Image 1 (cartoon, rainbow, N blue to C red):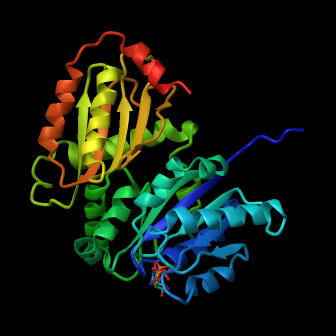
Image 2: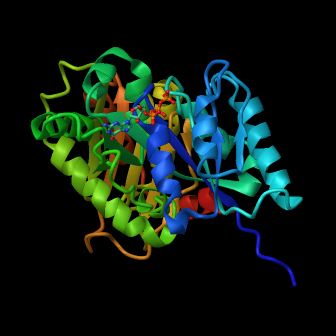
Length: 352
Ligand SMILES: Nc1nc2c(ncn2[C@@H]2O[C@H](COP(=O)(O)OP(=O)(O)OP(=O)(O)O)[C@@H](O)[C@H]2O)c(=O)[nH]1
């Protein structure tokens, strides 16, 4: 019998130094639904303390060589995943269907995420699942103000976990959550403390799962509208990371839109941390979802139905120091370009 090829899901668990990543991971691994999870830890420095901590819970751990995973992603991360996969095939470790990579607190998660799309060998065996970022309620606000890595970790997340809520008052937690929602309105926020179980859904409710996509898109569009859409002022004084939404209630021509998107990413790719869009494409009867990280755009996914029953185009952009007005102008200008053969161009561009 031929066994169906199913890539192993890889979750990235990131967050600033000491934010509570290992503690969250230990609690996640106690959940029965995450029993078949393997863990890769990247340590910065000589002493792999987290490795020892994790080993108490789960023996199937490979400790990456010292060094930052974000600098050596093509080497170390791949080697670590390959080694782990090889050990599973040889029966040296139990079969696993999921790997969690805990990054160092200083890691820039963008190259790690990008490598899953860019590296065909990695892509064959593994698929990226949710990126979970931990922000500590005590130091989170200060870390966001001082460290660009912390901002990037938040901007890139699919799920945000505010840890140490037991150590500060509810107002401080609420203020941090507001800041996080402004930075990344598309990510759901979970509040946690060390003595509470961690919900397996943080990893299992996979944002890339086509079956869940409609619900996910509806949630992040609603959040984006609440937090950013009608907000012209809040982000202007803050040139670090901001969110805005481009929208149109008319169908898009795929060819000019694709050209516009390529030009946008070519010009601003390193400042665009995240791009998520629900598109109404002329000549295509189903909603199309696009997702991008910096220069990289994932293959579009079709939904079965419009999240709110009505066709629209909404593109949420999370980026640093972007000129929103100029981007909006160019988006509109490209939309006005010719509409001929848009559906055919779309089919040609997205065919396997
Ligand atoms: N009170 C409280 N302490 C916490 C919580 N989460 C983590 N801690 C503590 O915070 C400290 C750091 O937690 P870790 O889980 O090691 O943090 P980390 O992000 O893995 O740390 P690095 O790997 O060094 O970046 C530990 O002493 C934890 O016990 C929490 O929700 N409440």
